[in-house]
Image (cartoon, rainbow, N blue to C red; front, side):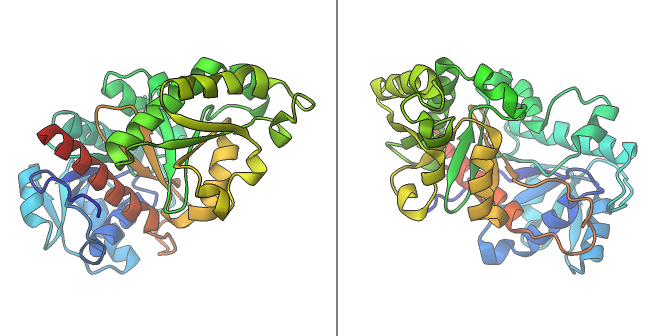
Length: 342
């Protein structure tokens, strides 16, 4: 049975880019909150934008401005609470600098609320990195921003993608495929996998997590015939993880790791590069994939999709990943709260 989040604290949901799907999906998630048994949450953003996004989507949902998390808790059953940080224009599909500025303020304030203990967990809606860069956002993405805000090096923040059927971490993330072999080290694999294993225990209630590590090359190198990285880099990392008491298998051929029978043997797949991890996750759990940042002192999740400017305001965007991100954030925060109370 999933834990129930601390009812004394709502989750803080950043609005994301107001020209994207974030505002309408926040309202859609609230509209489903009763049926889906979601924890109380508040959106940090513009009440005006959220209201217009709801009308555009055809949702007859009440939106109310609040000034404190306590007000959000009291209002949640009857309306979507919005910690209103200022007026904004709702122009779906047409991002601009003003919207990016509002998105940045929302991210900063939502992160600060969770860091300060006023909210139970952080859920970040999608942003447009290029637009944020134009207004002074000097980070590769929201993960790095949240890590720095928490006083954690970005190298210690591990991205996990999780869905009902699969959990994965990529050891290298947003880099060219040609750069991956040169970036892989045994220590990088060991450290990121160890952070993930600790998070599975603390936040997901898996007492003895089982890791499966993919090879880099086809057929996991086939004993060196198609590459040496499995033998010289990946295998030593696996040995170190097992020596530390973390049950780890591999290196495994990536093309046979993700079928239904194989997935029963592990709780997390450790992959060497971005697409090796994200392709199977999105094939299996496209509408419910959640991006979870591991290794932070706070819980942070995000729906595993972008701003989707092309369909914003059309009603075509599906709310499953946003609902899943809110639910997962609440469950992880509840486990932390329960552990702290012991």
